[in-house]
Length: 148
Image (cartoon, rainbow, N blue to C red; front, side, top):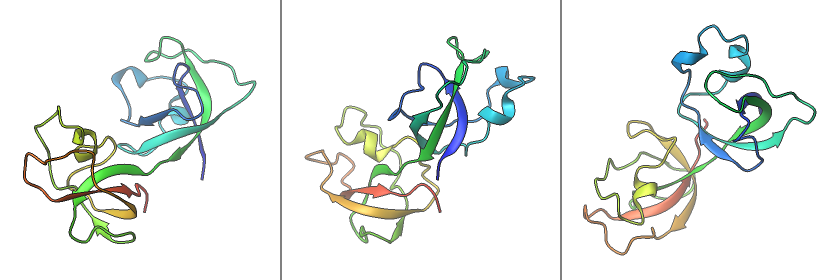
């Protein structure tokens, strides 16, 4: 289900994905707060449409102003423990990884997910992109739902 919100005009393109981090200090007193601050903090979203004929509004956070867009929460790819990694089951992330050069790092510490939360597996995608896990973890790459 789409939600209408305001985002920086430079990000206002269909397909753009972002993680909503909540209110910034510069948002205090803004007349558009209710239209901008209507998403769930920490959730990853995709712009599905840009509202046509909507004006660009001034914003203290975005130098190019903000535009009205429609967004939807998106699933997130992540590496999880191989045991029990099947569609429909619940899981959590195995924990942080210091190996930022690893091709799987973005899936071990994915944007929009927290280590202390449980997520439902939408789909098992198979082997992760790394050859060897430097933390000796047995992992599977999955697509996780971010909404209940």
